[in-house]
Length: 203
Image (cartoon, rainbow, N blue to C red; front, side, top):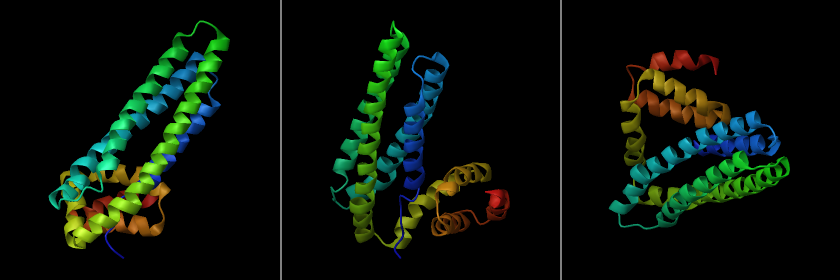
């Protein structure tokens, strides 16, 4: 099997759906529940922006070097994602500032629909990356070359950072995905792997 990026998309998909369920259950007449939903959304937003930046800088740059342009639509999606995230922030603000409970409920429903469309767009985006961009990277580069992309990142991470990453990702992954991550980390950080392995035993 060829070297594979995007395994973390399983976590991204789950996080998108978790926030969707959170917003779906929110009582928009209750300021505390509105704020809790906003905090959940804010955490997701920060993660998505960091994830998009990593893909642009680390993966799309590889395609640029080979004069491939298959990633251009994905980068447009990343820019549009920022616009959608800002629209959702504005809807949260409108809900908070609404004068009546009826208006809060109506705006909350509009927020939910807008967020649900955002999730649908993101799932399509993830699919495009895995079915168009990944095969192009595999066509243009060897497995050893692709593996170095993640290795550079892992070498900059402390054992605690590696453990925290795996604790977030592993509950959403099957054993094959988990083994791939552990193998890459072991190869990149052999001196610290025993420490990482011991710490994740409870996942």
